[in-house]
Length: 157
Image (cartoon, rainbow, N blue to C red; front, side, top):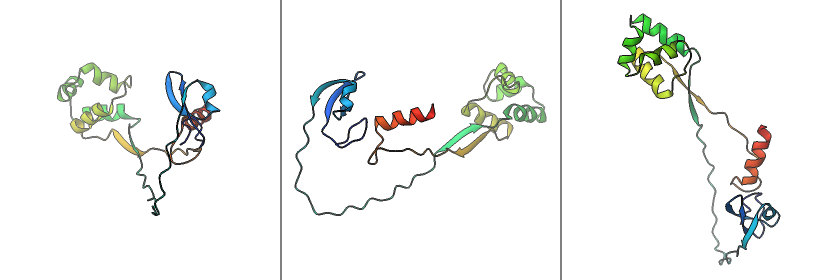
């Protein structure tokens, strides 16, 4: 079994670290209070079976965001239709002050509000883009350990 902090394959100890019981190796157990040593499961008779790992097809994560010139687009589309801020507010079931804040760029619309505005005004405010991929250095294996997370956070600082 792997240590949940550093990812090493060593004998593990159930250790309370900052109020949480984790299965960690002897060196990582120094960060908390050892509750009990873990007994390793008895190895079962090996079966001769070949398992092929399928390559994981990662689909890109899509992020929705609001265009930067949302305030100009909203105002132009509203004026093009000859509507006052009050009329637009009634059509999308919002307060007139919300429309004023949006057009003066004192407030950025939520995705839900932007979609209501898109529908009412026939404009595009929400754009979809792929999230940037973050390279994660993993200690061992396919899982991310707490130690990996700590390393990632230290790199960001």
